[in-house]
Each structure stands twice: as structure tokens, then as C-alpha cells.
Length: 53
Image 1: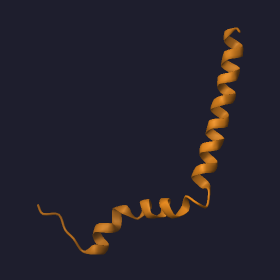
Image 2: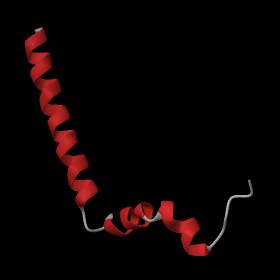
Image 3: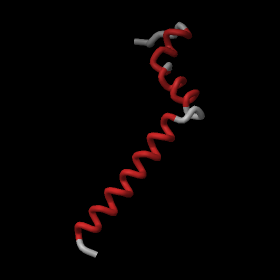
Image 4: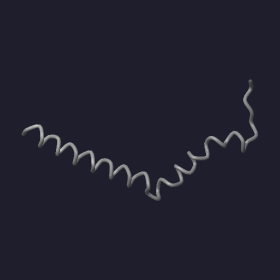
């Protein structure tokens, strides 16, 4: 196997991995987790807690 065949196979594997990750990230099962993570910076404001500085 020469280097060009190896590069082609590696490119195909990385493309499949990227598409799989993209499908995982945009799946409806993950929406709740990502919405919760998006609200994390505002959690302190909602509970009314302050820094103890």
C-alpha cells in the first residue's frame, strides 16, 4: 500500500467520523442536553446567588 492509498483511506474514515459526529450532535435525543448546557451561564442569575468577592 503506497502513501496515496493510505491518505485516501484516512480521508474516507475521517469523513465518515465527521458525518457521524454531526448526526449525533443534531439528533433530537441530544437537544435537551444541549439546551441545558446553553443555559448554564445564566443559572446563577436565575437562582439569585452572587459571588462572594
